[in-house]
Image 1 (cartoon, rainbow, N blue to C red):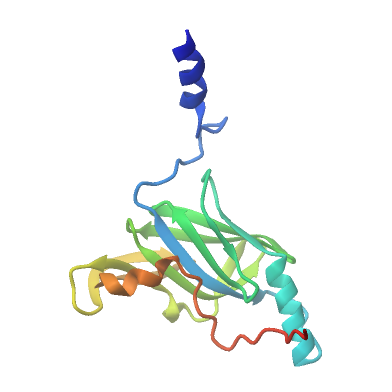
Image 2: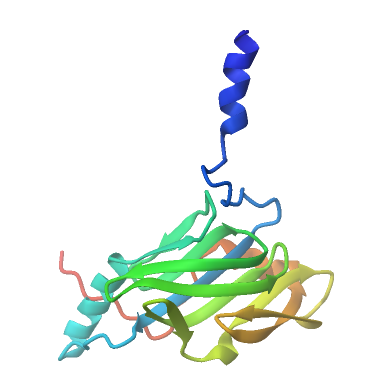
Length: 190
């Protein structure tokens, strides 16, 4: 009897009521990048006001993976984001930011254990665009000495991207927030 009292609650863990939520993947993908802005946002009048506006935008934003019980990560004060534990193959990243509460980025045909870099995303309700789609990278580790095309493709935010195999050492940063070029934080006085 004691066995049933302990086993039944454990058996129910990880399920959603509708049954449509995915469990944590055994071959997770990391998705990294940065938010450039929200489409149609009113810019600050000076560079200082613009930097303050964007910092507040990033602090007020969140990211998640649709229909996934658990995915770790978040958005940093410079707009860079990282989401770990994203299921491979097909998934959708959701963003909530002031002015773009229902922004989404679809990931299609992403290989297991891949690292996806999506630079300079412009969020909008119901979707998102990538400022320069040629900079999107989908990479996997392999037994190669230099980056090598695999001949496979993935689709990120509606753009077809080649899957690149890279040496294992190049994947060390897959759990780090990416570098945001040109970002200068607002000065703080102590």
